[in-house]
Length: 79
Image (cartoon, rainbow, N blue to C red):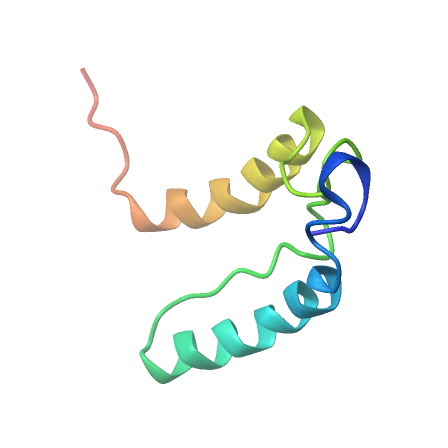
């Protein structure tokens, strides 16, 4: 979350909180043997509202997720 654009006033103080969230979620995931992918440094919120992702940011997110999903899913069956 970034305090910018249409929702800046609503999210006052949220930027700092959202940046500290990754470490907490990473600790919880580790405690439960789950994966955690911190995309915060690479996936930036839209300047329009500071919350939603741009098309470019969705592409960056997909780039991070694709190898993980490929590792988890079985290879496609040959037809």
